[in-house]
Length: 337
Image 1 (cartoon, one colour):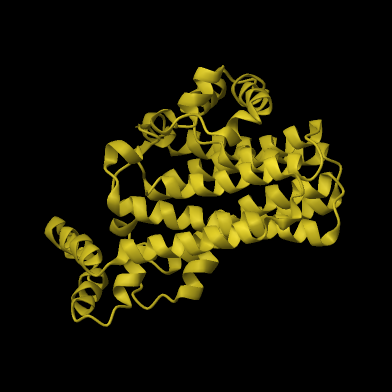
Image 2: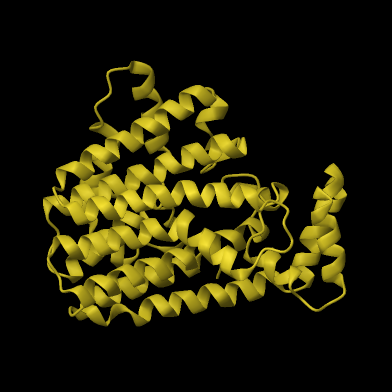
């Protein structure tokens, strides 16, 4: 099973991090539940779900959920359920994102919508959301139900907001952070906060757990934005530059657009014209973003949010678990180191 997890977490090149080792048993249970224990009557749906979870993934959200649980008391059966429903929501949202984006690749494999069709993909995503809801009910905690209801609302709101801002060169940093929070960070924050709630922590600790997840989630999103410009299609497992091509203004592009350099005007014109469906215009836009230091500035911003997440960890009393959570935070940044 360790070999399976190592492949899923995509960490062969950087070794097996200690923070994954310390929750290895729980991650094995999670993986087995996702791969083998989702109740499906349809053989087609079972085939699709098997394809999805055999593709692997970092399982970072469940990992920080388990770490927060361990750091605020202990990991219970309800924490296993919490981590599982968190990963189900994340996976379902990716499936729906791929449909919206007409994406062909995800994690170096063909997407569900590419292999089957949009209808099958929608139903599969809905099924995973439904399974997450069932598990949410099993927690029997009204406060956590409210937290995850807000997450689901945020995911939809963030997606619509992103769509409304396509090719908008006047997007503000507030717009960007809000979108990153609703689309990405809210789920990180929810699993950390809920893990602390299940261990009946005090209000201050629960708030800090939420802040840890929120700041880490924003850092994670910024790193993803950078990789869209710096990673190859083979490394990303999807088409490089796909966000910009769709008109999504991410952190590197936003830094470049707000530069006082005259080249920023040229970039604005190219983006406003939606690249005139020209490959050369798109390549020029990417070149200008690099020249204007967009990726380097975004990297510094990701580091700032990473540090903010670390500063919240005084609520973790166990020094070893705290060190693992610090390592998990650094793991997010290692993807662009």
